[in-house]
Image 1 (cartoon, rainbow, N blue to C red):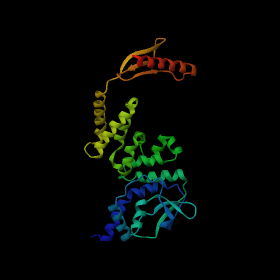
Image 2 (cartoon, rainbow, N blue to C red):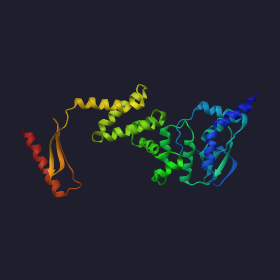
Image 3 (tube, rainbow, N blue to C red):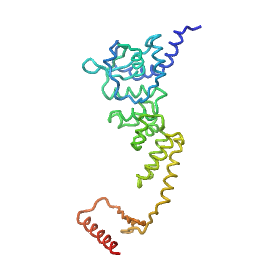
Image 4 (cartoon, rainbow, N blue to C red):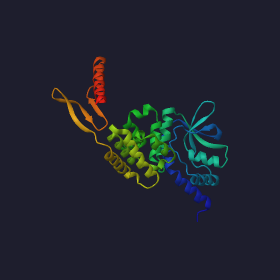
Length: 303
């Protein structure tokens, strides 16, 4: 029968198996060496996308390290003034801090800013508990040069391009939703984020109203009264109800020029809207248009 020490070692090995594989894949071509360094000389990675660290799991990891030692060193890169920046292994670093340890074994690699950000994200993607929003944060934090070729980036991270674009959908969401996700990153997945983005795009002509409807649905999602996959349907219902209470804008006439539609005139009980399909207009024509509109306004005021 295995001893308690052997069982702890086996459990820790299982917990870090994916991480070890990631290390072999991402740093095999890097120049590296090992040593013990002071924990106070290690700064956290600015590219760390993970927002939540489960305290129970951290304590379990700390207990395992206390019992059997650190099986896999953390990965850092050298900074100036004998300082280091963490690239991979923040859980293990935090576990050492829980144990009040002063030093930790590290693998020191040569990596520039771009390589460090990519390595940090690649290491985190190997963890199954990283949320879709946190993956987006990691992608968004990458250097612009790395993000230019999304197909190449997706391949280097082991993602398919479709998923890559789904993760990036978070970028188009309202600030209120992003603020909530910063503290509760598991509230919204990439598929729902893509649906949110499409909803806002489909209603871009009345974006403010669409955002309000989406935020109304979002409040229901936060309250766990609505599944995230049904949020867009709920928002569409809110939008339809609102529009039914507002006088609809009817098309009065189309503006035609040389046999083609060059614009249109719309009017409801409160407003008249004119839109023209022109890319530019000179100052003289703009002044003439302004004078004509002023005459229409003056005429309506006399009625």
